Amino acid sequence: MMDIADLRREYTKGGLHREDLPVNPLELFEKWLRQACDAKLPDPTAMSVATVDGSGKPYQRIVLLKHYDEQGFVFYTNLGSRKAQHIAKNNQVSLLFPWHNLDRQVHVTGVAEPLSPLEVVKYFHSRPKDSQIAAWVSQQSSRISARSMLESKFMELKQKFANGEIPLPSFWGGYRVRFDSIEFWQGGAHRLHDRFLFTRMADLWHIDRLAP
Image (cartoon, helix red, strand yellow):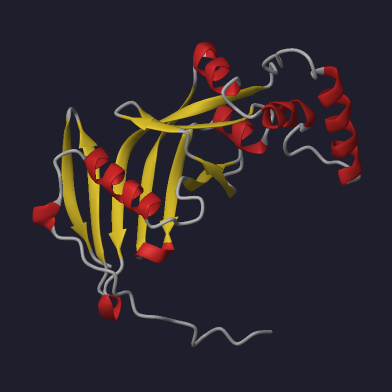
């Protein structure tokens, strides 16, 4: 086994001060996301989505954020996937954006709601054609015997849809996470990190500083 106990570094990229916080957390999220993009971080829109199954066992996976606004954070997925099955029974989820190179994290909690068919079909047809075909190929989270099954199915459907529009699969859709809290974490020297939690209270946001 590797000895990893002494793997550590100092967090020196900057601080986060209460006087610099906006009233609306989405403004700070957008600022940090833009900075992550400007810094050319790999996959700046990648976020971990955490759900729980019927017995309370937690699961996490990485997906890509595809839209955000005051209504929530949007991602797309196969509606037969494990995450979708969990959400159908318990739609309380959390999201985590890990921007390590900037010593930052953003943690979001909220309720996942299905997107409208119009939103789904509009986004589906904006995707590259190969990505649309891949959505048809994969019954996400189901057990398969070999990768070759996916590859042969992909080539079969690529020929089938070569000269026409690819229809939206009935088993493919998306979710909007209507957020009720957002926490911003900025790494600090000597492990004295800055953490601010925005919690929705009616139409206002309450801000707390949290101990690191």
